[in-house]
Image (cartoon, rainbow, N blue to C red; front, top):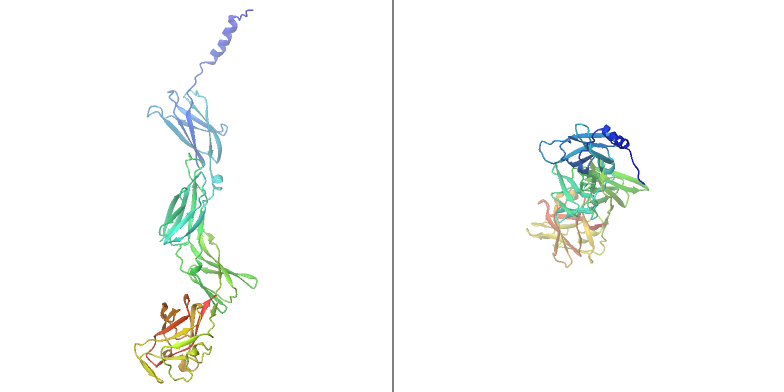
Length: 456
């Protein structure tokens, strides 16, 4: 069976296309690429070789927003073109097409990209600082080994001699040294790129690493109900002070030492432990180190009942009760009297240049870290500086010889009836005290009591 279509019907179909006019199709946007940024997106594409194309139109938000980029063909040839579009944080589909002066258009090329902003950045975390300390004179910072794929590295900031210092640490490096660092705090911030193609860097919120003073640099002394704590001078421009807390009679107490002072004097203190932490101010925000717990030390005198005391020279017979045992009898009115070098008195002569001393044999080898020396008291003459030793040295030994110099040249306060001095913590059986300095007036030097003790 043969079907025939009349010529009139065929001509009418062609006529419909002829009535619409000639359709012009321009070349498409070639190979569009996208790059994310901070509240912006960068687009790159090749300019089409079609000489009729005069511009590229980019639209997004379902066509509600658009921008036109006019071709610049002055350099000749096919080249890349680009544009940066400012958009709020979010995911976008960008439609690109070419157009000419007659408003003819190419087919659409589409590319998707993300614009990152504050919402993305607030969830970024800093690479952890695991430790920071001085090691053999250098300040070493140890960073965590765990890193994220989009992490670039971290910046570390500190001040030295009024100058801002900054060190960038790549994510592949775990340990770094801060040159010329002498403080107790530093700031750090981790850098991210959401994609390897990103045109902007994003930052975790700046964090502060705050260190406390080492406990071995703190000397707590409990004198009756007054606690004196001496801290070292702190060389850190962000340091603002030290907070000390303790519990007394079920109530928590807080004492703040400001940055311009090094001694905390706490009255009416009666507790066995304190906690303290160092404070720093960064951008009007206070940061704290971790707490350090410290036992409050009390002076505990050694038992002197087993001591044997011998002197370097014979004792003068004035007073009649002059004895080496007097410095351990607990009576401040009795005393040990020794003649000064170059003097004679009450049957004893000591040549100039000789050393005057006494030696204590404790029978055992206890540990001690302070001594107490009490001058003679009683009548007016007993308070005279001329009868008191002005400077002394101490020698520890476990054999009875001069094995070790404990401390030399200790200035004795001749105006205070009792002197207590810290000395290096030591363990010895024998202690020798030499008289090193005195006045030339009068013939003798007198000591009422002598103690050794341990802060505990």
